Image (cartoon, rainbow over all chains, first blue to last red; front, side):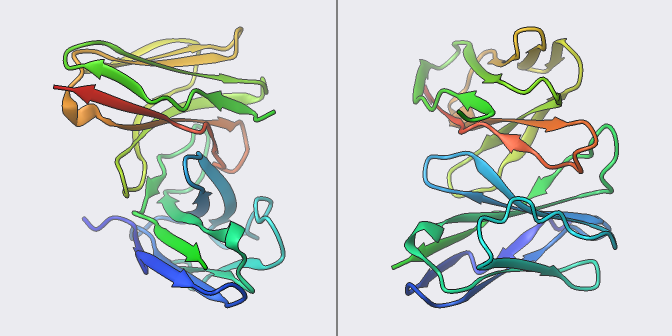
Length: 116
Length: 112
């Protein structure tokens, strides 16, 4: 079946512009996650959606970052007034409901964001 | 200091050798431990998942967890050039909403 898809695959933007990154999770997955991977670094958690619960936004680095998940499916990560330090690969993952022990997270290919 | 430390490598081995990877962590609240493989310009994919201290084997892969030392390892036997990738350890605290904390990743190169 189809995996997690993300668009665009690459995005180059000028400093100060806003960008929107899109994630389509695996059908039936109720949990959705956004991570950021800077060059040569591991993944940094940004935000997590689980069903109709309030999202866990504890990883968002500043109020310039926000995310929505519409209809419990597609998610959009928005970065306002982009800065050069926002340059990174933004990865989305989805999983079945978050329980104990945790379900596997399936990752998309990422969006490579470059802020010039 | 990061919660999860991982040597960035690169680690270069000849084909057929054993690859040994490890991570250390500082927070004893971590209860679930994973290893992900990430090929260049791809998303990570789950290789191994362990919950308790001890060994878990799956084909050529063995994962070890030592909670008393806060140390986890991944061994790859009979390494192949196709194993060349970045390997990331990840951990999760109990009841943490499936939020993972990753190490920085170790780049592995298996030379034919």
